[in-house]
Length: 487
Ligand code: NAP
Image (cartoon, rainbow, N blue to C red; front, side, top):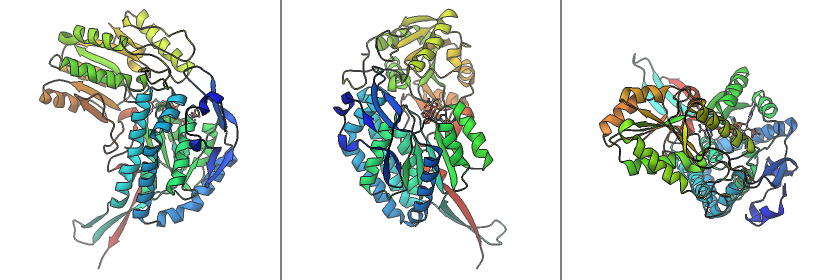
């Protein structure tokens, strides 16, 4: 890996890695450039794995598999716990790396590191509590004994928007379950993944248990690994489009898939909501990571009686945010990940404006260096605009007015996605009743933030398959084995 001079000043050089991490060895290389989204300048260059490198990674994961599977749960747990402690000790360097390569504000990056590390602590605890079952059959003919075994080698593919947390949310349960893994982080944000692998080494993760590859050929590499019969699990977080492609590829060798895909979260505010609480929640649900989150509120449905006050309050809060590079401690809204991301947001906003929406703040990209889009609030947005159907993935809050509870439910469910949703109301009975009808994997009631390593994270409809985190997350990396027993 080579580094731009500016970069070296920010993070602990001990965390800098040389490139691909396979079988406990670092392999230097070049070919993938990492840009600073705040300036567009080169930050670093990392190795570009070939298909042969990916095959070597599967070999390494296979060579380590039997030993790791046989390692007592308590020992696996202690390694994860040490990894958690090292991430916590190095939290500031990791947060700086994330702010540099992803662009998110330091305050968000620090939050991400704490959240990411917590997956190692949670799964250090869960590693020692893998469930089993013992029952008599209903007919009384024999006993049913169910054990859970590690599923086998897991390929983990992660996006750029949470470079640390999306990796630990998969590595934690996989290692706790007894699986060995190959992580392919996003090309835009590989530095955090490599830095975490360094810490994993220090924590005592044996060679080959965790392998990390960056590549400019994600489709080719993924297909090659999925075609290898030793790979039994694919855990993917990313867009629904890529998820569909990978599901089709995994079907060829019937590989078990966990899919954390896109979202289009509705944020419903009823007339009886506490306005200030709803605005606080709206800012968290919309502006964490400058809107680049799968759980980000994408559609604000606000009841007629509170609509104008909500729009005014949200506009004032959005206008007050300080825009700047993520690594500037004053920044509250960093840049988008790429120029393409800015173009997509611009297209969605321009189409909405042309269809009759009005921007109460923001509404067009900023012209300075870097990939900046300003915090934007839109009102009068037609409910069928593209911005209501597509993930915005940026700091834009489109607000739609509604009248009745039934209308809110119908509008909220009018999407192929079903990852997250939010409801604000002082009437808990109403919120729970409406919530029952919302097609979603996760629902925040009077809360703008729901992610928690101890809770099951995931979506319904085209937002995904399976759940990460919580007590069931470990089972995504295990196969139940049924023993029919008589004695
Ligand atoms: P993406 O384009 O789908 O990429 C995700 C990962 O897949 C990256 O590592 C990417 O590699 C890789 N990839 C791309 N094409 C591939 C292919 N043909 N085969 C195998 N891998 C391939 O998504 P993104 O833009 O990074 O992330 C944003 C999306 O992730 C949004 O839709 C967001 O909602 C979703 N997301 C979901 C969750 C969740 O938990 N549900 C969490 C976070 C994000 P390269 O970087 O090399 O292209």
